[in-house]
Length: 124
Image (cartoon, rainbow, N blue to C red; front, top):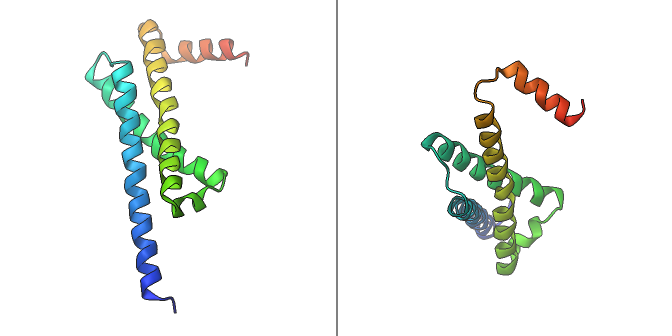
């Protein structure tokens, strides 16, 4: 059986790591929104959700891929992980903004026409 003190300390560390990740994701969203303000409420909502999900999901994936979980044992490691989660949210904002610009220019086009254009552009 595990020692109760070590189990409680591990639970507290995981809780703090979760809050730190959420804080990094929110910081990312605020920074990118200040850089490029969305035109509509719909665009703002989609971009915000995408940025938060890219931060949390992408940050977690990068941490797992590079096996950086040991960094959570140190204050400076946690700060570095926060920076990593922050950076992982930026591509989400860029992709959503690019999609809205792309879709706005082709407002009258149908979905098959847009897919055909994307395939031609990608060379598929």
